[in-house]
Image 1 (cartoon, one colour):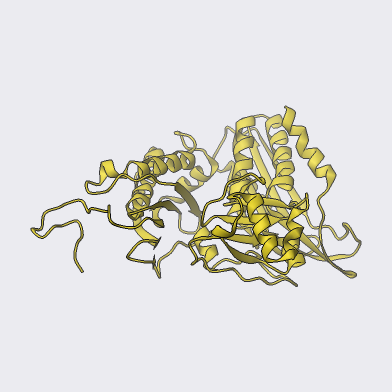
Image 2 (cartoon, rainbow over the protein chains, first blue to last red):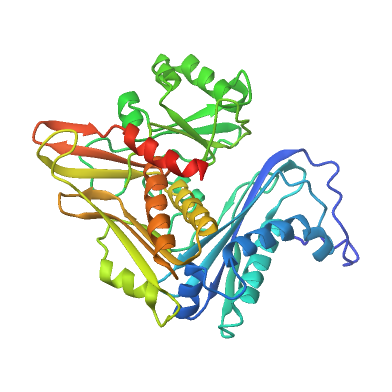
Length: 279
Length: 150
């Protein structure tokens, strides 16, 4: 084990990544800011003097990830393909969990970008709330998972966030799609190991009609890199998926409502479901 | 404040939470949706509510954001229950605070209309004569459309 940022003379240097192969890399980092319950309540209600705290902190985190090489001396400038910052409010212990996910296809990992995003999002939360609470405490900033690259897969075993499930929790089967007691249609949740796949979920009535809840489709098998292409690949694999052609069936890509033309990239989560009937 | 939970909620507690030490609020409108014992078929015994964790919270947050842009609101609390529910159980709460009543009435109405047509929840009804997934209603779509032109 040695420190790659130090050369044989013990001097700091930037690692030459030119010879590394390009792989799809993703890192997820988390952090937590503790505050007074009253501050959390104000934050949740949008009642703080500086306005929409979470939206501002999200943008701050995303911007920070993109500027990591300006802050951390030996980091490479990377063309990130995705940065997302999510928040979970924990009323029980008056804290906000911050999670950042960074992704790219390239030669170097993105954990520094994810950690920077979390750090700056936490600092922004502090800045936005400090008028009403100076005792806030930022902590538990750490890498939660990392995939792709030579050092392989890393996943923190303990100390993940409480509260609402994150996307990565769901992928590991921590949170079921069906909550509470259900009379029929128990489902499994697929593990997310295959990097070159599209992760497909079928929900509610559609899941029961198909008898399929989760399936991974190799990205290479898509005739076109969009939702329509995915439907063709699914039908090719199993004629039952012809059901997805029904006009009433809706589709979300990475949890955002989508259309036939919505482009897909490796690792995307695509859910198909019938019209919603909540409320 | 947005919550998706299996446990029941207390309307009085949520109402009070909106008002907590504030004297600038002039109106609070609370809507509570209940499980009926008749729907597509009579004798509904129970309901299973499924959702899409992650997307549910995001879509509810987007609906509340939009309401806050359209009306001058001083607070919104939105709770939706999931899992096993029985007739008489409260299923959804939308509580909206504003300085003047019109904003609170309209924003509450808007949030419910959008929730019913945009948030990924699905109901399965269990009746004496079998189980089935509840179908979408054209009237819900029509209700949601009302807000598109204004």
